[in-house]
Length: 241
Image (cartoon, rainbow, N blue to C red; front, top):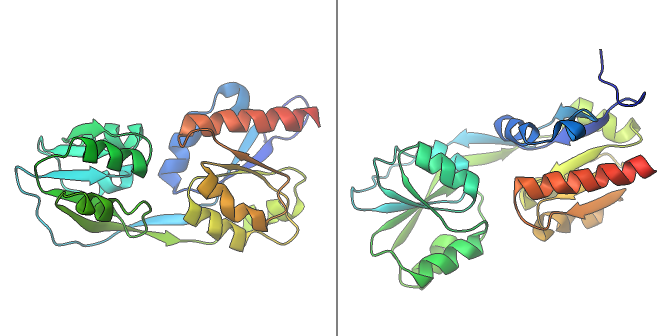
């Protein structure tokens, strides 16, 4: 039996990240918000491991820009890991790395590491599709950095259920968390759909100019809690009609 809120059906919330990431995000929603939403799984990206031949020495360190990088990396064994995002730093610590939180963005990490350059060889263990040119910028700044692809982010289509809701439902909310996913959503979104989009950043929001969005809300910070706050704002507007 579908959940109800004040006599009305819950609003579809189409989640476009990989399933595990979707679950972590939904778990952060306050009950007052989640009971008004119907979560629809439609991952536009699937994380696929890639075989990589490399060996991190005992005195060397790594750079992680996502928890997926941590998941597909060797155990830390007490070695140092410089991390973008609190979630990434926590995952690295749990995997045996001496994690160092270096801010929420690639720019923050680069600035931090150039301000206090580690005197060790560095490995950036990342996905095939990355932004920020971290290895290149740090190398230009005098650090020894090798980038290694340890997973791919394979694009996937919207599910039939998600497309049907976007075509037919009066109100649909879609959080988007990366520029690549945003571009894929724009390509997959049915013509004439008017979703409420919540974007992680201005870079994520940029492709949405091609859609006739009912609304476009950009998170003030590139983290999950900021996206949750934006969702609450969108829901408040919808409630007011």
